Image (tube, rainbow, N blue to C red; front, side):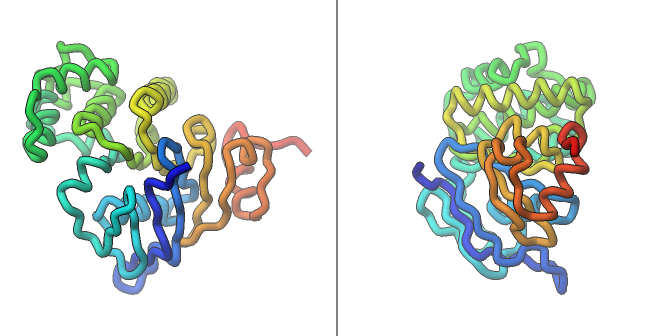
Length: 250
C-alpha cells in the first residue's frame, strides 16, 4: 500500500510541556487509521501538527511525498488535506448560512462551478436543499456535523483528519455520522486519520491504529487484534477494560 502520510520523529512542545515526543506513524493510501488514548495523550495534537495548527519543534511530515517542516503549509496542502473538528457547535460560524459556509472554501481555492459542488456536498451528507440557507442554530448537532463534513469534502481532498467527530453527539446520531463517513470514504477512496477515545468507534471505522499516552506511541495494532483482545501493552489492556462493551470475561 502506497504511503500517503508519513510522520517521523515528531516533537511538539508548548513551553515546558512535551505534547508529542518522537512520534512516528505511516498511513497508506485509502486506509483508515486510528489514534486512541486518554485525554492529554497527544492524539489530537498529532492531527493538529499535520494540519499546521501545532508548533512542530523537530521531525518531518510527508504528505503524498511532499516534505512539510514547521507549521507553515502551502495553500495546495489544504486541497489535499481537510480536517473535521470535534465540536459541531464551535466549528461553524454562527452568523453564516450553510450556503456561505460551503462557498468560502471554494472561494479560497479559486474553485469554479460552485452551484453543482454545493448541491453534491449536501446530498452526499444526507442534507437536502432546504438546509442550504439555514443558520447553525437552526440545526441539530448531528446536522451541524454533517455540514462540517460537507465543508471538508467540497474541495475534494485526499485525506480527512477527524478529531473525535462524533463525541459531542448522541449515541444514535453517532452511528448515523459514522456510517456516513464510512460510505463517503469508500465512494471517494479517501484516507482517514481518526482520533477517538472510544474503542468501539475506532474498531468500526479503522483498519489499523496506535494507542498513545503522554505524547508517545505505546502500541500499534489492527482492529481485529483490538477486538480479540490480542494486545501486548498494559496501557492498551487498561483502555480495553475501561471501554464499555470491551470488558472480557475471565
